[in-house]
Length: 142
Image (tube, rainbow, N blue to C red; front, side, top):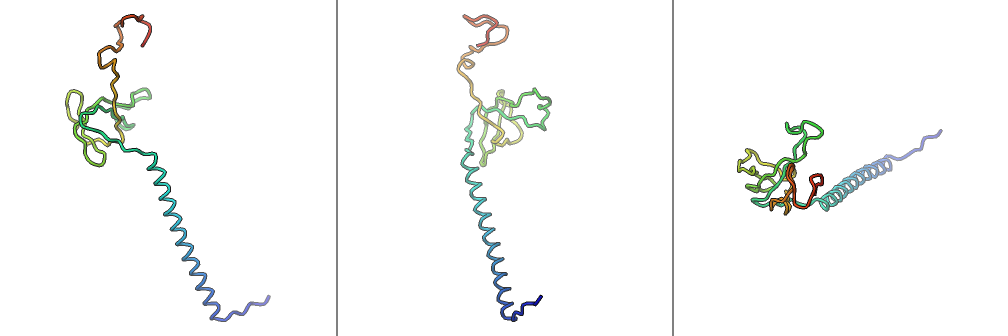
């Protein structure tokens, strides 16, 4: 085999062209990465809506798996209802019990959801064990 004889000037030119191509490819990959991150953020933000809470709203708080209340498979997932005492910026809340006892730490709004009371419970007409509602047998649940 015969080696190709290349002048030093040509070799330097081709080497610089290859180096500039490498730099250009790295810049395009960085640009594509930034575009990908922007598209992913737009897709995420499209589906996320902010939770706006007001003072004196009723809320329930999620029981996290590492808490003492979450001991078994059949334990409840939500704890409450609580009353929003104070709303802090960036989604932090101070909660109180129904009795008015304040919790000592702030709660993130991500683990809280609104608690809705239905009209029957508000008027005291909800079904309870051991009581009979008018026009219903004891075996049926409304």
